[in-house]
Amino acid sequence: MIITGFCADGFKNLKNAAIEPSPNVNVIYGENAQGKTNLIEAIWILSGAKSFRGSKERDMICFSEDFARLELKLTDSEREQEINCILSRNPRERKIYLNGVKQSYLTSLFGALKCVVFTPEDLELSKGSPDIRRDFIDLCISQIKPRYAKTAAKYEKVLTQRNALLKNISLGFSQDHDLDVWDDQLARLGAYISVMKNQYSKKLCQFSKKLYSEISGGRENLELRYISTIFDSLEQRNDWQTGLYSEYLERLKSSRADDIKFGYTSLGVHRDDLGVYIDGSIARDFGSQGQNRSAALSMKLSQAYILFEETGEMPVILLDDVLSELDKSRREFIISKLKDMQIFITCCEPIRKLRGKKFLMEAGKISEKVSTKKKKAVEK
Ligand SMILES: Nc1ncnc2c1ncn2[C@@H]1O[C@H](COP(=O)(O)OP(=O)(O)OP(=O)(O)O)[C@@H](O)[C@H]1O
Ligand SMILES: [Mg+2]
Image 1 (cartoon, rainbow, N blue to C red):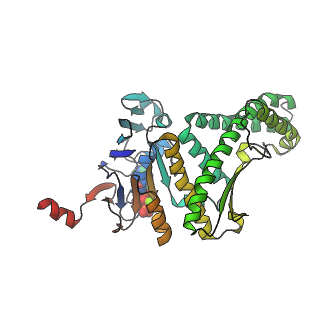
Image 2: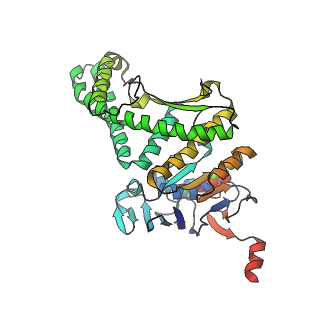
Image 3: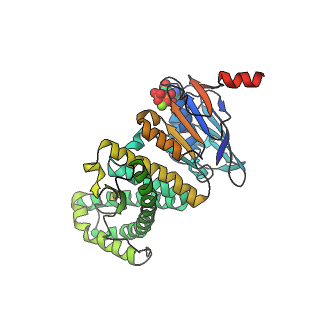
């Protein structure tokens, strides 16, 4: 999949920032606070995912403007597609079109533009807290199965309602049996989510293991395992509508007394984790900084490879400020592994070694910088 044209106007500090990207490498360079990450974020949100910076839609509009305009053209293996958006602080004035067809939300765009973004925070994927890995797996599966995103959002809603009820019960306003209806829904949604996460974790392990072995020169072994707070093992299990649902429900019932005492749901997919092990030991506790970074890079690269395997489309890669965080060998490794994909890289200095188009970002305005060699060749 290749982005053939992109324009952002009034998106944060971007001013009519229009580019015709190279199908290979695109380097966006410039000093700090000029708008490089804003450009990456603008492309990313057109993939239908939440902002990787946590920006709300209203925060994306330039302080001095009422609207932000985003346009993107892409070519995939089947056809050309177009996304056109007008974002507004007033949601009723928002206009989002995919190939001319009106969409209600940015999330409705999920599936058309496939992207994988690498940010400096992603380097914490192995070392950081479990919620980072939970969000990562949720996103990875949603990119492949939009239905999963809806189920995960529903789970969150039901969980919030169950937690509110637990507090009401401890205050004497509600009865224990009022929980039955919420437990039933949590168990149904949670059993499905557990199966999906376990299956994805297995695939992620296969890909990441190979990549990690390459980075470590074959000296170390990486394993990833889905850790559930409900099930001891999900090996060969796919019966989320029957057996797994019943087991999930039982576990919720058995923790009910504790949950009422503490006022929150102590077990479930919202407490699960992805175990990252290097040579058998938990990486976040025993791994070095370098080992954890290699594990994180292997997992992010695997996200791109699995997306390709599952959808048949090479994702567009967005590397925001990541290369400058890495040493030379990891930098070269990651670029070599992404060489068949379209890449957008942000950095402060233009990277001379990288072939492709170079764009300078200055105060929200972008301009292509043609090398003197190329210029001379054109003039001739
Ligand atoms: N809603 C907004 N309206 C206008 N400007 C905004 C808005 N939100 C953020 N900005 C501005 O965007 C700029 C930051 O842009 P960005 O994060 O893209 O910088 P950058 O070029 O990636 O910098 P760095 O090299 O430090 O990562 C800041 O100057 C900030 O004030
Ligand atoms: Mg930045």
